[in-house]
Image 1 (cartoon, rainbow, N blue to C red):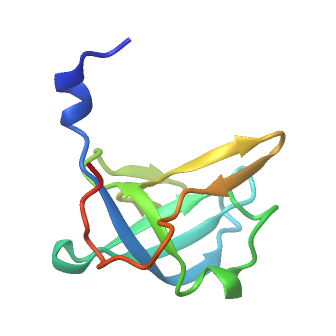
Image 2: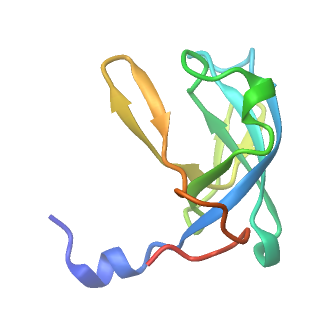
Length: 108
């Protein structure tokens, strides 16, 4: 269990995927994503979502991500945010807003 103050420390935002490329250097199948967070700029993320999504369908999709985690190096790639999803058996379903929101919109 974490206390509420710790939860409040997470900066969760809406962003739009600008680019999605296959990430062959990753141990598990993944995409390298470039995501526009509006006033926060563009951040990179690695996401193991290749079972459900193809890269063409990801471009333009809005997602929810934690943007204030420490960057993590995955192979030769620097992941700067954590895209959120829900696990369904062996699949990941991305969390996304119900309607389009401005990039960088904070999730409260």
